Length: 452
Ligand SMILES: Cc1cc2nc3c(=O)[nH]c(=O)nc-3n(C[C@H](O)[C@H](O)[C@H](O)COP(=O)(O)OP(=O)(O)OC[C@H]3O[C@@H](n4cnc5c(N)ncnc54)[C@H](O)[C@@H]3O)c2cc1C
Ligand SMILES: NC(=O)c1ccc[n+]([C@@H]2O[C@H](COP(=O)([O-])OP(=O)(O)OC[C@H]3O[C@@H](n4cnc5c(N)ncnc54)[C@H](O)[C@@H]3O)[C@@H](O)[C@H]2O)c1
Image (cartoon, helix red, strand yellow):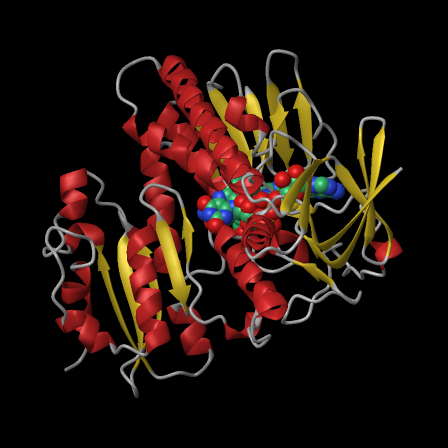
């Protein structure tokens, strides 16, 4: 059996792993990166997750005319062309670094910092001074009768559903459920979203959840709350999803009920790597596992599941391998999120409910987007759903949090997050000069509601 020894072994081509491989390989350190699928070069984000789904959301928003199925098929073609291009670019990016060796196959630990990689009948043994586990997550199929039926999809397979389902039942009202529900409604499917909770976005303020529900309803999504799916029945030419108080008929079902760590067959125990009760690799605030010299980065370590968090994970590990060794996950402040419904829902910091629950003295300013006179951009784009809400510390005048449910919010939230990190006062954002017509200029008007 061939045996390779290397400085750094990366298992899985996730965002953190590829960034580490590029940085250390370019600095001349020997790196081996193992990826199990040639369809996943570059990792989940560019192949099956963030980028292709947002390409589909965009195509859905552009849809005009009377042939939903044709539009969808063409959108999927554009999606595939984009991912093919990105996958090739990602492969080239690492292939062109002399010190990086790319290995196709599935890795399995056989000892401390030692793996075997199988690709067909070939087996390769790799030992490394440092190992980085970056294997990501996979959909967590709920334990429901009928969940493995032919008409039942996860977030990956639904992107190639053929034909476009006339009726789609989406199970789960989290990030994936809401994004796909909104997208398929815009493609022309009749969408029913079943969610186990009493209302959408149970962690958000009521006015925000109501605004999101209104936008989804206007897009044609029917949301049924308190509907925890119990059984899926395939009727041959259709499918139904049963919950405690009823059932919904559909042509296809999307299960969007969360994800689980991709550690099957990795034999983490052989490396002395501990996992928690959900199977995620246990790490400290510098992403070190229980095994010396083994790190876990990205979704598999149980942290927030976002590409930019995986990217920041790479910075923390890189800092230990080639820097000062001081960077930690606890350094993260004001980390924003965006759910790509239409318009996008972006959040950073505390909600009003969270701030008040902490006993903070706050000023809250909020305005429906349609009523923000000094922000014509949503009217220009013809998308005036949503609201903008900011929570400000009454004592310091500093921003504590923001909910931006409006066009361009995936950009605007980054500016607000930076302001929070840099200690910029809300009044400075209110009094700043912003370009026109932009979405940023909403800050002039919405923050004008603060007491002077
Ligand atoms: C539908 C969807 C939409 C999303 N949209 C967004 C978004 O808009 N914005 C955002 O920030 N995040 C989004 N996310 C989350 C985001 O995709 C992940 O947080 C991100 O990809 C981080 O991944 P990672 O670094 O953990 O590794 P991944 O990108 O998951 O890569 C892990 C790699 O490891 C490989 N692998 C697994 N096991 C082995 C093994 N034993 N041997 C070899 N290789 C192995 C896998 O094939 C895979 O290529 C979305 C997720 C989904 C599912
Ligand atoms: N825009 C983005 O950044 C983005 C987009 C997609 C995914 N992601 C990441 O991927 C992760 C996984 O997304 P997800 O949507 O699968 O998980 P999630 O945890 O966000 O949501 C799962 C939802 O399913 C519901 N649920 C669970 N079992 C159910 C059942 N039997 N019947 C009805 N409802 C049920 C839960 O109440 C919850 O609302 C997210 O947490 C996020 O980190 C990010």
